[in-house]
Length: 229
Image 1 (cartoon, rainbow, N blue to C red):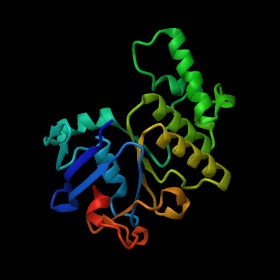
Image 2 (cartoon, rainbow, N blue to C red; image 1 turned 135 degrees about the vertical axis):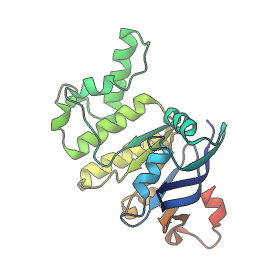
Image 3 (cartoon, helix red, strand yellow; image 1 turned 135 degrees about the horizontal axis):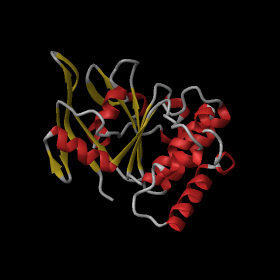
């Protein structure tokens, strides 16, 4: 699985530039935290990287692409974005998971994959529950199970522990560890980096439209260029 290498990420709304000329690499099996104040553009950056919002300007290095709309299509095949408040469709948890299955699977394979996803996320007991009635932590686990089923190599999570109690947060972190062990690359936007103690060494900060090393995470030998790549 190759790294996701993005260059010159720029997003403008008319004359206003939200961010300009950002470079970012995401690597398989590695988690990066994206910090920044409210309104800094963290969610917009995640949506651009996920291909959900075409950038004003962007370059992909592998495979090479610099046309924003074509880049967005490539990104949607490689990246899954998880909203702070994951959407649940009407119907059961199992029905919600079916939406993430690839086409063309036979019935037995589909059932096996769904059972595996339920076990992986620890939500077997919720299989027939109404998805829209889940608690915040349960809905996050459903969203992660959908992402796990979808199988994209990179996941972007927007404030995944917001409004979760300590127990739900611990379950979330366990699943994130499992995704890393599976070789998935993660980018987590958060204003509470202390909630991610195991991932805190590789922290970036978005401020003033620029992306740089979060100085609180830098050791004496750290290099900003090395961390951004």
